[in-house]
Image 1 (spheres, helix red, strand yellow):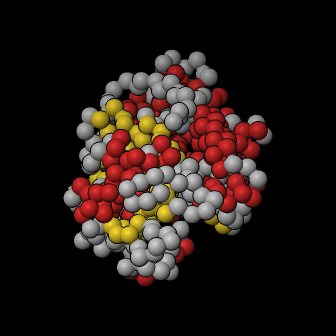
Image 2 (cartoon, helix red, strand yellow; image 1 turned 180 degrees about the horizontal axis):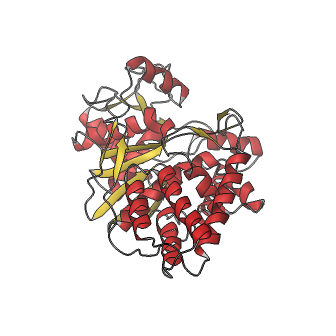
Image 3 (cartoon, helix red, strand yellow; image 1 turned 135 degrees about the vertical axis):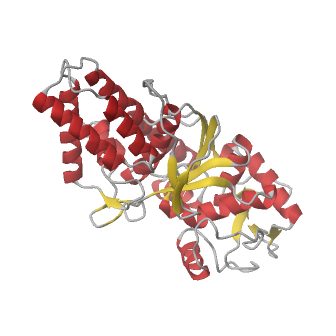
Length: 412
């Protein structure tokens, strides 16, 4: 599937700093041990509604990682999926009287436009679940053959399930106890009460054909993929084993990332699907987490239509640390607009204070678990000094503008 146009990323003088990130599985910040080609798989949208700021915060987090890696000299192989076959999509399409493919195509195109406006670097591989059916079937076949999966005893709907105990390390990614897993599994798309399952936590791999639902032929009967298995199949096919980062929002820690990792591990025999599991915090509005089900959304497309500078959206979200749950508000946007204009005024000066140390500090802060608040504060300081006291370095304003563009994705 087509992704979106890539913004130009300028090259900075000197060398970038090796990246350190918080790993959800290890519960600590540690170095990201990427090779020359750094690999990253980030879970994409289910395209039944427009992109909101919760989505934007997640994809901006991994855009920062992409940029820091590139600045450090890595080639980045970034893969993202689109869950374009799932119950929420069918339900919304039925509600609106539109075909599910038409709805998915429309919202995916809007997502592309939002990512383009926000200057997010596109994935090298942008893969729809419906374009990866063959990979999913092959993976499910391997799990059935190894005993990691089974077909429920249901003549009408012989669904295929993954055994939660198929790997001894299951649960390491989230670190959750059994009761927490059971609660979140039920809340986040699981079916603990499905008759015929060996364990309530067993996850759906292949949903047998139902009336009115799309389906594809397979050796284990016509049907469609479960949610978690599509990501495991796409990542293994496009990147292979041992990816550097599996990422998404913190609401994907369990069950989605726990199970997608377990699916892959049950087939490859590896202890860890990814070397780092990285998760972005939730964005709230009006006292609650932003979510489609609640309807308390601030849409990127609406902000664009209202003339909001995409650079201000980036700066507003970067004002808080990526792992923190935080709220968006008119005050956050006002502060971001003020900061953006402050920076633009400073880099428009004919000269300013030397910016060599500033560049080093911004690189260091971003490489240290994406510490955007410190990076923004450092840039604030240079801009205030430039506007208040001036400076004699005629190359400094351009260097600062280039650094902000390359590392933060904000065009000054």
